[in-house]
Image 1 (cartoon, rainbow, N blue to C red):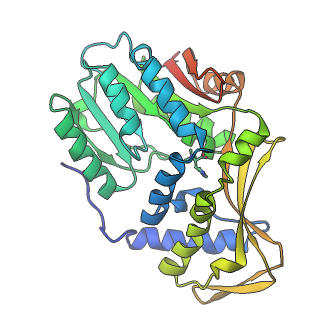
Image 2: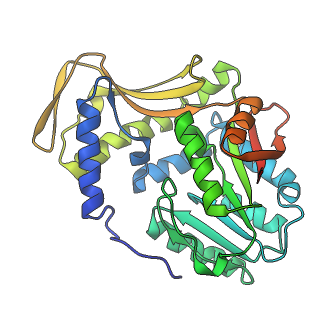
Length: 321
Ligand code: AVJ
């Protein structure tokens, strides 16, 4: 498998510098913050996999149900030679459902920042779908990237599952949708998974699971900073906090300092007040109408929307208008 491989030991030197600069800037800000993209080191990705199987965490299994039930309609009327481009292909479980629903697809382009993960998963997928051209691209899908030459000129369908779009601020979601339109080109399609506004108790439970996996996932970012940036966060002195913010239609995750303390990060002392929080993630929830409006403003027409009977989750089929 032809992937541009980078350091097998995690971040390269530039990425390490960026990580350090982001962490220092975020912890020097008021209120303190850390970027959600730093959750996904090896341990963080494993913990997220565990989250997707939790009884309280409805998004993954609900979206899978929608893809299984409506996959053929989502992938209907494809022109011959169409290629599927997945933005941020973590696990390949979801795309396999679409590939099974669209046996005429010619190529699959998984785009992911983690080259190691991409290589292994793409190789397995290629073995299982021998007639499909699997063309992985190691790139950050939040920036403009080049598609492989083999798919240029082909009809393209983009796939952005998992409500990853909910991690973006609304203006970032708008920018992503516009960039996707540029990358995929005229008369393309985009299939997007979007988590929906619902009963606050359901949302709260999904991010405060009884087994404490989401708490470990949130706290793991401190473990990662300790290891990679030589910091001395005491994990017992911080607690996971997640709650729904109805004014912003989002789940917020924070890490709360349980005491007044100083933490050393790369020779700097970062002071914390007792009760002070680090904002680590937002997970925006949309109504069907609000997401359609966001898509329309970015140049995408809604062709169809599929949901589960309880309307917990939605999958939107958008077309270039
Ligand atoms: C990966 C953005 C879909 O927001 O539900 C899960 C991440 N954070 N539990 C989400 C997450 C805590 C997840 N997404």
